[in-house]
Image (cartoon, rainbow, N blue to C red; front, side):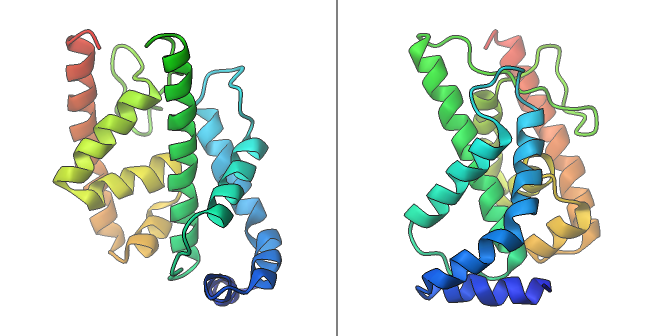
Amino acid sequence: MAPSDITVLLRAWADGDANAFEQLVPLVHRELHRIARHYMSTENAGHSLQPTALMNETYLRLCGGASVDWQDRAHFFATSARLMRRILVDVARSKAYLKRGGGATAVPLDEALAVAVERDPNLVQLDLALQALAQIDSRKSRVVELRFFGGLSVEETALALDVSAETVHRDWRMAKAWLKRELRKEVDAGG
C-alpha cells in the first residue's frame, strides 16, 4: 500500500471511522515496532518495557487521546515517536519518584548523535533539555526528537517537518551542539 493510502486511512480514522484504524494498524505496525526497538535500544538492559509493550502503549494513547487531524503518514509516525518518548519519560519519572529521586533510567546518547558527556544523561534530563530547546527553537527540538528518538532519516525528518534536507542537517548540527552544552552544564552542576 502506498504512503498516500495510509494518509487516506489516517484521515478517515480522524473523521471517526473505526474500521479505518483497524485497516491502518497492519500497515503501520512494522514501522512503529522499528521505532519502539530504536527507543528501547537506548535504554538499560532489564528495562520494564519491551518494544512491543511500548508500541502497544502507544496504540492505546493514540486511540484514547483527542482526535488528531492527521496530515500524512510522516505526521503519524512523528506523533507516535513523540508519544513513545513521553511514555518512557513517564516510566523514568515514576521510577525516580519511587526511589525518592534516584535511579532514573540512563539513556546513552550514541556517538552518531555526538552529544555524549562524561556521564550519560538520563532520559528525564534529556527530556528537560529538549523542552528547553523547544522554547528557544521548536523545529530543532523536533529534529532531535524525530532523528534520535524516532530513528527517522534526514529525508523522512525533512518530509515530516516540511523543510529541506539541508535545513534538517543544519538544525541537527546546531541542536546537538546545544544539547551537549546543556547536558554538560547538568553534569558540571552535579545533576
